[in-house]
Every structure is written in C-alpha cells, then in structure tokens.
Amino acid sequence: MWWTPTIGQAQNSLPWTQRYVLNKYCKLPASLDIAKETVETNLRHFHQFAEFVQIPDGQFTRLKGWKKTCLFGKVEKYRWARPGEEEVLTVVKNMETVHVETCRELAANDRVAWEFGMGSPEDAMNEIGVYKYFREQERTCRYVLQMHGSFRSETRTWLVLENCDGGDLFDWVERQRDAGLLNEQQIKRYVWQILKAVDFLHSHNVGHRDISLENLLLRNGEVRLMDFGQAVQLQDKDGRPYHYFRMSGKDYYRAPECYIPSSNTCPGLQVQAMCPNGWTPGREVQVMGGGYLWPAFVATPWHQWMSLPLVLPFLSCMRRFSHGSRPC
Image 1 (cartoon, rainbow, N blue to C red):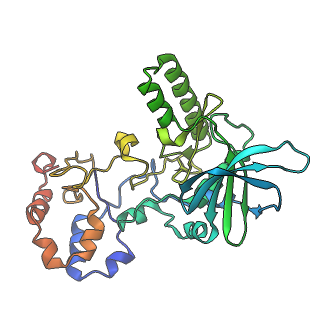
Image 2 (cartoon, rainbow, N blue to C red):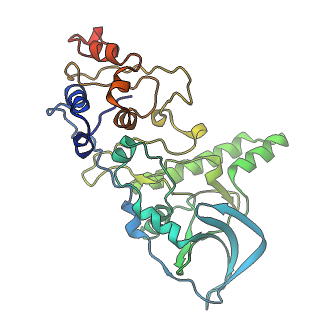
C-alpha cells in the first residue's frame, strides 16, 4: 500500500522541516504517467439526479406495527393510493431533511478525504440520486430494487421503494441453514441474479461498494439489490478508471483489493509492497503498521515524529539507489 500525499495547501502550513521531508521523500515524480487512472473523483456526482416533489396529502397510509431504523431516520411501510391507479404497498425511508442536506457538504474528492483521515459515510443524497439515475435509463433490471418516488417537506425527506416480502438474504440463509434446507440450485439462482444486478450497475458506470447479504432483499423469490449510499462512478468520460482510497462496505464482505489493513484490525502488522518500475530512489513512503500516515504526520510535532521507531532508519534505507536493497 502506497502513501502518495498531495503537496499543496496543507503542506504550506507546515514547519519548514516537515516541508523538507515531504518535498525530498514524498513528492510524485513529474514524469509519472497517470493517464490510465484518475484520482480526481467526484463523490457528489449522483446528487444532481436527486429530485423531490411535495409529499402528497391523503395518499399514504402507514401500516402500524412495522418499523426499522435507517440513516437519518426510520423505515416504515405505507400503502400508496395514487388517483386513478391501483394501491401499492411500499417501503418508505423517512429521514430528516436537514440531515439529508448535510450530505451535500461531504468531501467530493475521495483522495483528499482519505489524506485527512475522514471516514467513508453513507450518503443519503447519493442513494436517492442513484435510484433516480436508474429510473432515467432505457433499460432497467428486475434484480435492482425499484424506486417509486422521492418526496420532501420542510422537515422530512421520503425515499419510496418497492416492498420486498421475503426479508433480506442474510435472514434467508439463516433460516435455511437452521432447517438444513440450503439448496445448491437455489443458491446458484440467487448468485446468477446478483451477478445480473452487478452487470446492470457496471454497464451504467456505477459501482455499489457495499454488496452484502443484508443489502440483498427477496421479492417473490427473486433478489433485489439495494442501498446505494456508497455507490460511485467507475470511470470518467474518457474511460479512465477512478481510483478510490477509503475503505467502504462491511469488513466481512470487502473485496481483498479494497481492504486497507491497520494496526487495529491486524495487530503487529507490517506492510511490504513492491517498488513500482520507473520510480527513482527516495520517492516512496511505505505505510508500516497500517493506518493513515498523512493526518498523523501533520498533527505530530516534528521532534516527536522523528523519534518514532523505524522512521529515521526507514528514510535512510529508502534513499538507497538499488531497489533490491530497500525495505520495499
């Protein structure tokens, strides 16, 4: 795992001694070719698709006795009786508008957020925008949860979704396992449906980043993929893949290439990484022991930082000309 800090405004506020180390040991080579990948991400891209109308009076009737919690509010079931249409049972994410609006203030560039140690929170505005974006496409996917509408009042924001009568896939697996009824053919069908949903997302340049059994619902015996609070674009308009830095999703479901080891999850960890071809001596900083080195470096006084174990020996070793003689 490589730490490649942005040398910019944050650096200008540092003491000259810290600026010296950053410039000497941590600056990216000017000749480095990054044409195949971009780190200029826009986590707010799907916000532009989020649209709301006033919550209609007299059309929604809440079902008592069923309620769950969600980000910024609660999840309830409502019967929706639209004029001239058949009544439909829906699930409503009922959230506080003021909290949903705070999502517009989240960092847009994932690399900047990562450098300053920000977490990777769920984005309610992003989820609404993704559902709306899918509704605008010519082709839909039956294995992706459908949105019926998005509504707003001064105090409440509603995301109205199709109801799934079978619960989530996690509960289904537990029930089948406890009854000794886990069926290989049924599992294959569900896996195929999940892959079709993922294919639909990727064909529309959307990466979910939080697929789990808890985010897969069952409706009439079929899978429905939901929860797009951490979804992102996969590539830019020129086809270059985006590079994201922060952890997303749940620990147990995270793909290996998206896992960021830390001293909390792996006590005593030491990360070893191969030096990329074409890099010159002293240009790399290895994250040893895991974690976010950049915020710790900024916040730590110079004399304390230089007294940390392995810092001076490590920097000295990284200046060796031969790649094979360096610690990574």
